[in-house]
Image 1 (cartoon, rainbow, N blue to C red):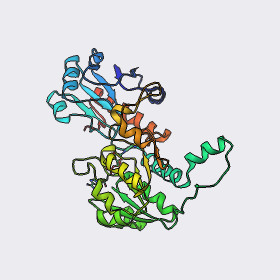
Image 2: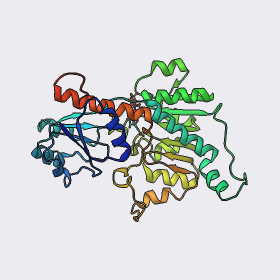
Image 3: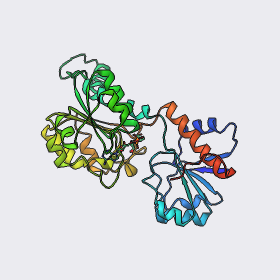
Image 4: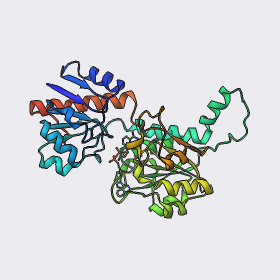
Length: 327
Ligand code: NAD
């Protein structure tokens, strides 16, 4: 059985080839992003594998169905790029990876916090340039700092453990209180209280219609002056234009992003191209903004899990037995 991978990269090939050693499926890796216009390359494949930037909307799914595709094995936990209802109508099964190392994303959020706070991104270029001045490199202790965690699920809880290790005071906001967080001493408060009391705010809730732009002008108005905002969850949680205004006024003192509202269009190798997104370009002019390109999940442990679970989904679909995580 052959499987076509969209949005592949060398690291995808390496991890999947290793996970496939015993299963021995024929894995055909392709860098192309899936959309309506590229879907026809799936002709002859009943199984394809996709990533977060592949566009599985109604028109793409219709072409995939005409090509004979029966299973889309997502290499991600999120599936907001899939029109699940249309897939069901077309009898295309959508499988996903419900959980993998939550430490990967929690630790990346921490990396953004430490880099912004201790100005590692500036110190790195300064020292390479022979400038050993300490001016403007002052940080603050995380010990004793108040850290707000919005969404205390798997990643939020792993993040709370790390902050607990630093000796920070942790505030949590979620629809339900998490037992593990309560044991850790996380104090659950209302969203308004969390926004108004935290020196660092880290987003770990999913993107739903009700969480879209959860960080907007009203939310920012409640925040402490000079707050640090970290988003490793989904770009749509943050109203980027409102955040830019707050960066200009100094209300937001630090911004760490691993995700961005328009990342689907932007996050690829554009190093030889002109970036046309003026909002993103404005973000990059601030010295207190640090952006990474949705790499929070990218640790060896997390990707071994992703490759194994994706292939297990495919294997269960083919053999009609075993665990298949359907959306
Ligand atoms: P999870 O389902 O374990 O936890 C999500 C938590 O958010 C749950 O506790 C849920 O109750 C809470 N929540 C839901 N709606 C909420 C609301 N309106 N307000 C507050 N809390 C709410 O998910 P997880 O595995 O911890 O992942 C969290 C998010 O991290 C994912 O949705 C995804 O967007 C993001 N993520 C990012 C990366 C990356 O590489 N940067 C990788 C994986 C996941």
